Image 1 (tube, rainbow, N blue to C red):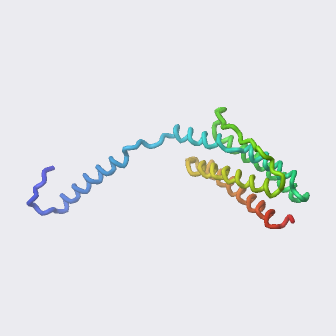
Image 2: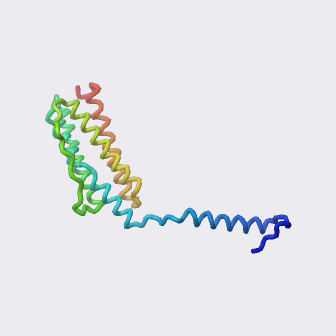
Length: 171
């Protein structure tokens, strides 16, 4: 297309100019190749393999042993079962290629219930962060819904555990 600088622009010339500009911008925006489903799968598998389920189970066992009353111990025992179920569900969605990160070893076992609870909440926050990354990167709606439900259950459990520290329903 030839342009005459002395000619006033008309609708046709403006439309062609916008179309050419839009094509150039689109080309520049698409310079980075889109992530393939294989790359996404590898990322999701890596995130799921980095979740420290064992650390949570260890801390829950410590909490159960340090709990002051039977009601609290029973609740925490239920959380141990829930943790195992969530682990199995997440591991069922993603490939466990045997490349797992080393589990976090608890160097100093917490001596009080509140210290163990604090350590568990920290570990649980990291676990929830990994679950949120899975949720954000997941394309399958069914898997996404399951991950969302796991996150909601774990947040509800954290809410109840937080009541332990504030002299809640179990004290």
